[in-house]
Image 1 (cartoon, rainbow, N blue to C red):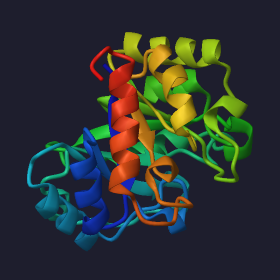
Image 2: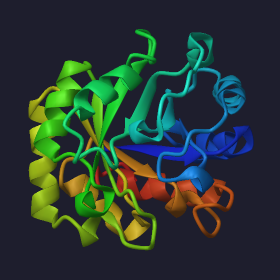
Image 3: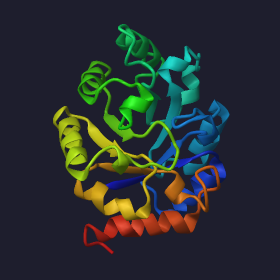
Image 4: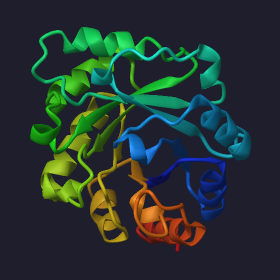
Length: 233
């Protein structure tokens, strides 16, 4: 069964997502980019709100944005953490740069690698290289996402067959496959049908735009729709 991850920007949104049935709570600040990092204080507040009911993950921004020191204690209660690899494809030493960034993640917190489907716009490494890197840092999952949030979705860059192949390659490497990319409720069947382990949403869970508040009712509707594909609704 495909699990539902909802990205939130504060504890209030985390509570709404949790009550709506989210299987994962992800913390990010959408005004800071596709993987914009929220302040560690927000992480702590979300972890306290979720109180172990579901796993919490955090976005850490882009490796290319430079080194940002994050104290290890900030990751307390965080199950997974991810950096983006945008604007690294042309750098011959991108693996070293990314490895250095991922070394900030404590061993108790599982790394997540990210592949941007809009690779040409994101200037990110190809999927095969991201998979290889994910194995090097022992990532537990790879997120397929879009870097530029301009209304175009994952399926503007990958067909259903291409997505299914990418998911299979990720899973064959031993990692979970998560899919985001401005997905709407109408995309859920395609993502679940492609075999994704986790479906990641932000805008589809909000009352309006992706910068608006997460809606409990929207999350509940997304979860019910996912359940319907497994004959559970």
